[in-house]
Image (tube, rainbow, N blue to C red; front, side):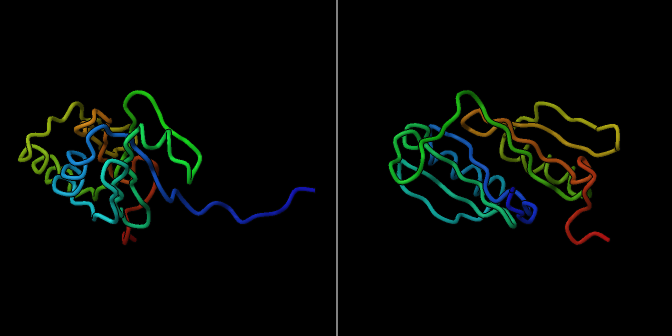
Length: 141
């Protein structure tokens, strides 16, 4: 018999691996405006992101941590952050103001828009309207 459990309610945390935690902290806090939650020099930087967390780990520290199972990834990761539809141009301007190059812009078949750029560690980041997956914006009717 299989135990019944309620459905998973969302993604609680997302992890990216970065070699330079200080450069990553500055990027995510200053450029993207995320709220710093916690940090441990040489090991991690954690950010609040609405109802989830973005965890940035030094890859060597994540592989050698004894308090949790070792984890890691090779090569650049990818995270897509949600933005309001009316903020598309404002976010592009903000990134440009910080010298961040937008690699590609996409208008998806359902009309959703997104664009891609890189963090200092080379991770692929995307800003997209929630419509990309058929979701409504937070607070939208």
